[in-house]
Every structure is written in structure tokens, then in C-alpha cells.
Length: 181
Image (cartoon, rainbow, N blue to C red; front, side, top):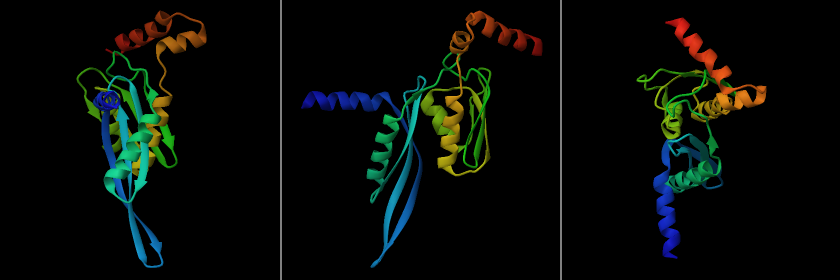
């Protein structure tokens, strides 16, 4: 029994957990209102894996626990350039939430608002510029951000799809960056 507990502790320390939003919700019943809480949590390993989850319960800690479990079940891998930024600029949307995610040079930091910042911190991105357009609802912003991250492709995967070499794909990027200077 003790071994299971130790592996759980190790697993907990491996992930970065960010509580994005807690909302009090009410259910109207015969005797009045029953209050509960919904929580939105982002979980990541800081090395390119990230997930989000939501949970509802009568108490805040229980809602957060449920949301964290849901986030761990929904982890996705995002390819990162040099382990610090995105490979290319990308747009994501969900409902009325629209986001623009842009790769950034070293030293830029995470320039993003609220819920998007939590996603990038958990993902392990160090340099990114992101803008939220439209809905400021945390659920829609998170889902739009994940939609954008799902569209990020590494040069290796693009080269494989096109039947070319990685140097053909990446070579253009360096050529464009040098031409911009």
C-alpha cells in the first residue's frame, strides 16, 4: 500500500497545476438555493505536455480535485521550438473566443492574459506573445488556446507529410529571418 502512495506523490510533483477559475453556481430547489462550485484547472509537465479539465462539487477543494483529475486524463503533446517557444504563429477559436498565438525571440517572456498565461506556464513555454480576441470567458479562452496549440506542427512532421527533408522546411525559416534583419 505504501508503494502506491509514494508513486502518487512523485506523480503529483511531476506536474505543474494552475487553478484558472472558480465559479459559485446555484441550483434552485424547493427549500431555496443549493450552492456548489465549478473549477477550471490547467495541468502540464513543463516539457510540452498540457491538459485542462473542469469539475463541479459542493466544496471548492473537491471541485479542484475533480478538475485536476480531468486535466491529467486530457493531456496533449505540443511540439516546441528549442523547448521554449512555438514553431510558428497560429490562430485558435472556440465559440466566441478567438486567440492569436505567436512565436517570440528569446527573452520575450510570456506575454498573455490570465487563462492563456496559465496554459503556457504549465506547457513550459518561455517566450510567446498571445492575444485574446472576443470572449473573455475563461472556459472559451482555454478551449480556443488548446485549439490553437493543436494546430502547431513541428518541421519534422511537416517534412514527413510533404516527403521532404527537414532542412528544406527549416531552411526557409532561417532565410526569412535573415531577410527581415
